[in-house]
Amino acid sequence: MEAHRRNARPQRAPACRYQVTTDGLVILASEAGVLPMDVRKIRQKGRLMPGRMLMIDTVQGRIIDDEEVKAEIVSRKPYRSWVTNIEFHSMSCPIRAMCHSRTT
Image (cartoon, rainbow, N blue to C red; front, side, top):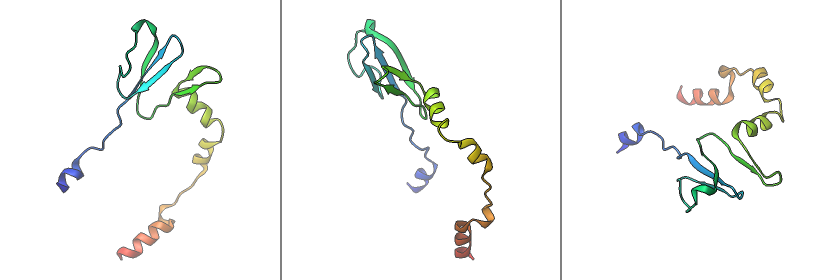
């Protein structure tokens, strides 16, 4: 049993499916067709893959897709320059030093 756990692939969340109706209802679920729906009322449908976002702006009455959500978030702070300017020396890391001292 232990060998099986080590070699088992991690479980991934299924992709969510969504439908937008002509009257503005958004249905998001892990399965398609969770609610009975007249296909003539479906304006848009899609699949939300792992790592992707979908935001519903109820004030503006629109769906904001993954690219726009992420662009808005990254524009708030200078994340790229923070990552670019960080120097990390693993040999001087206190956690590494603590772990190394336990094994020697």
